[in-house]
Amino acid sequence: MSQAKSRRHQDKLDKTNFFSQKKVAALAILSAAADQQDGAENSGGSSPGSEADSPQNGGLLTITTLKQALEEQSQRLISIWQSSVAELKRDIQDIGSRTSHVETKMEDLLDAHNASTEQIKSLTSQLQQCETKIMDLEDRSRRSNIRLRGIPETILQADLPNYVHGLFKALAPEVHTDMLLLDRLHRIPKPQQVAASLPRDVLLKAHYFHVKDLLMRRSRTAKDLPMEYAMIKMFSNLSVGTLRQCKTFQKVTETLRSNHILYRWGFPIRLIASRNGTTTVIHTVEEGLDLLRQWNLPVEGNSQTPSHGS
Image 1: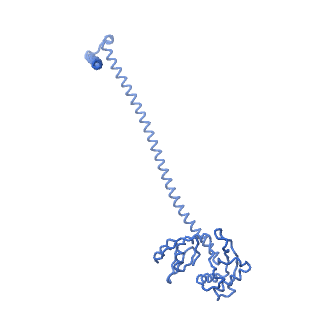
Image 2: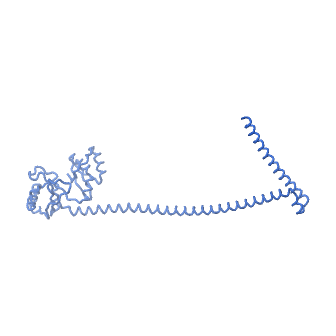
């Protein structure tokens, strides 16, 4: 084992000596070439033949050729680098131009989006106003209508006028019979969610609006009606959109009814409540809930039955 180790050490020394000798020889050649170049410069030069015969001339030519090759390679690399840098500059300028164009387009799109958003808000507001106006016009066209609920199906169509006149006379006995003129009177189909056992509603149009208004007010406070009319309820005939808006006030109306506070509907849709001799107009559900909190009234929960007024 020691012999192998000695052999490896000897090989390492031989390699070191070999490269050292090569290095010394190369340095000697370079030194001789430099001395010859200095001598040539001092003597004014030698003949071409003598330079060719000199053993050191080969080393000088090799160094000169190497320098030329390095210079050519350096120039080639510089040219390639300059070309690459110029191309890179063009690409950067092109990217900058495209980026500027994209930013300009984005600003234009953002401005257009903001303008469209504002226009949509304006159109939405106008649409809501138009819908409210249409509902108001429809409700005004129905303002003389009354919906009667609870009239038994045993009362036939031919008997409805006498039955309804009897109800109205019970509510307002001072009104002359001629003032209880009805333009139309008929039953209407039931909604699908209404039980089949319940009778259909009766829809009528009073010829005189002030009589209709009087009957509606009397129906809210009527007491001790004849037995055949005790279960009859009277409602205003409102449009579907108005009924949908009325349903949003359900918590407010249920709370008012549970606390025996009278209210009525105004049009365009609003709630008019009377409490302790003071009338309050409620335009939105939020206003109604705030008012109930001011009155220290607990808000009632939701119910499946839509409210029609007290």
